[in-house]
Length: 600
Image 1 (cartoon, rainbow, N blue to C red):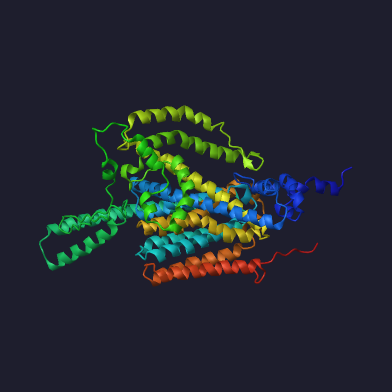
Image 2 (image 1 turned 180 degrees about the vertical axis):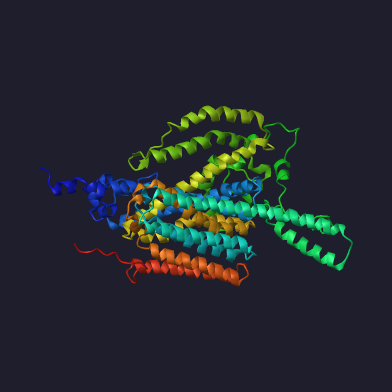
C-alpha cells in the first residue's frame, strides 16, 4: 500500500529545482542534471549544465569558475554576433522598409524599430525558462533599463529638437499600459483570456492613433500648400508677406516629418533652399540610391565579369582601409570579429541602399537563395524539436531539406538572368531573407544569453528575480542599445528616441498579452503573486519615476534633449540597480507587502 512518503518521492525529481542540484557533491551532479526536469527547462541550443558537469567533468570550485568565465566569453560572442547583424542587415532593412512604406521617422520608430528591438523579449516570454518567472517584474525592469540607458545614450550623443506631441504620446501610452497591466493583474489575482485581449486591444488603439496622426499631418500639409498658393495670387502687401512667411515656415517644419529619407555620411548632397519656388520643397540631405545601384553598370560588359573577384571581396571580413588605419588594439578587435562577420556574410543577404550595387554580389546572393532558407528552417525546427544528443541540440533537417526543391532552381534561374555589375530589379525581394534571418539570429542570441545568465546566477547563488531585473534587463537592452547607437550616428536620432518608448510599450501590451494567453498557469487565481515577484513593486515604482521625470525634464528643456538629461537618466538607472542589489543582500526591504497566512 502506497504511503504519503512514497507519493512524495514519486514526484520528487519533477518538483526538484535545478538550484538544489548544486548543493550535491560534484561527482553526483552529472547524474542528477540528466534526471531533474527543471534543469531541462534551462536549455538553449546547448545543454550548458550537462556540458559543465558531464563534458567538462567539473569536480571543484576552481574548474567551475573557469567554466563560468568560458560561458561569459560565449555570451560576449553572442552579443558580438547580434551587433554585427544589427549593423550589417537589420538597420539597412529598417530604413528601406520605412522609405518603401512612406513612413515618417516617428512612425518608423514607433512601429518597425520597436517591433524589431522587442522581438527577442517577445520570444523569450514564450520559452519554458520563463514559464514560472515573474515576467511582469522582468518587463517593468526591461522598460526602466531601456528608457534610461538607451534614451540617455541618444541624448548624450546628439542633442536635438523633439516634437512634443510625439514624445508625450509615447510616454502617456507607456504609462497607460503599465497601469492597465497592474490593474488587470491584481483585480482578479490572475490574468485571464479577457485580460490578455484587453492588453492587445490597447496596441490596436495605439496603431489607430498613429495612423490618424499621420493622416492629419499630411492633410495639414496639403491645406498649407493651398493657402500659400492663394496668398501668392494676392497683391503684394506687408500683411500678405507676413502670412506667407508664417505658413511657409510651418510647412517646412511639417514636411520634415512627412517621409523618411535614407542618408549617408559618405555620399553627401547639397541642400538647396527653394524660397523662390511657388511651393517650398524642403528636403533633408538625401541619398541618390538609384545612382548607387547602377553607377558600375555598363551594358557592354559580360554578365559574369569579375564574378569570382566580386565574390571573394564580399566574403573578406576585413576592410583593407580600416585595417591600414587601425592601431594594434583596433586590429585585435577586428580579428576577434572576423569569424562572426564571415558567418553573417555567408548566410545573411545584404540589401543596403547606401552601398554600391546595394550590396549585390551575384555568386554570393545566388548561394544565399539556397543556404539562407535551409539555415532558417533548420535553426527554428531544431529549437522547437527540443531533442539533444549529449549536450548539443540535434540539428533536424527533415523539413529544411525540402526547401532545396524550390531554392535550387530559383538560384540557377537567378544566376542565368542576373548581372554582376548591377543588381536585378527583384533584388528588393532579398529583403525578406535579410529581415527574417536577422530577426532569427537576434532571437537565438538573446535566448542563449538569457540561458547563460540564468546558469551563472544559479551557480553564483543569486536569486532569479535579481538576475532578471539586473543582468537580464541589461542583456535584453543590448539590441536596443546597439540599434539606437547605429541610428543616432547615421542621423536618425528622432526615430531611435521614439523607439526607446515604443519598444517597452510593445512589450507591456503585446508580449505580455500573448504570453498570458499561451501560459495557462497565469489563469489560476493567485498567480498574480508570483507574476509580480519579489521585485515587481520596485520595478513598478521606478518605471513610474522614469516616465514622470522624463516628461518633467523634456518640458523643462523645451523638448530638446541634452547631455545633462542623459546624466540624470543614468543616475536614476544607477539608483535602480543599487536598490536591487540592496534588496538582494537584505540591506533594505523590497517595496512590497509581506505575505500573511491566517492560522487554521
